[in-house]
Image 1 (cartoon, rainbow, N blue to C red):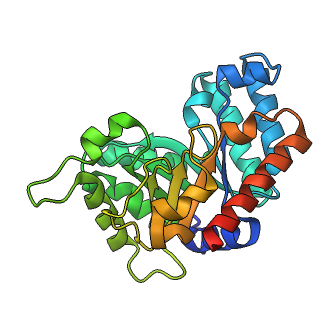
Image 2 (image 1 turned 90 degrees about the vertical axis):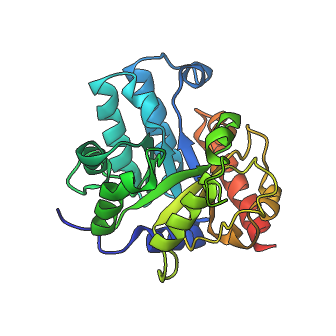
Length: 281
């Protein structure tokens, strides 16, 4: 394996500072393909993904393709995902693969290899993972991410209402599961400059999170801006002093403007400006 020398946290900080702190999802679900006038097939999937990358890859900091929307087409869909990742990274954008993988032992190691080994055709700058078989189950992914200069985003405090029954459950030591995951990530990122490579997924729609220590010295991937109801102006109140490390994710709010390339670019630029202004306030 040929490692990426510069850690993900360093590369992400630079991308956010130069391109703006915006992550655009690539979510080619059937309804959106139809909205674009595309068929729900491989040709539509390929056209959609190529258009998003060509429109935005030279300006946005991060793309977050949702693997499931490609995998539903089988091997041909995965081939489109491979090309999408390669094209986005070649144009200078970072790619966070939204696959939410989580398992134990050799299976977790195989998932990690698929997305975090630079020799893999699906190699991404970071991967979303689920820790709910225990944080220690992520060890193979943590190890490979460190070796390859990649990153992880661990589900900690997600925006879906069902997540609270697990993430806000309280352990015997009085700490919630979500807070425990944040503490693990803070430990992974200890001493990293300008920030660590091990981030958390924290919903921007969750309101006051002051009871949680979000200052993990790592990135906070924040879905919920736009169609889900959160706004850029909400970010400081939700994330507090950790707001500078927030990577707000917008999907439908930008993608609904396609397939018009100029409209996609204008929407992404507007979101980036709003977020930059809110974070700097």
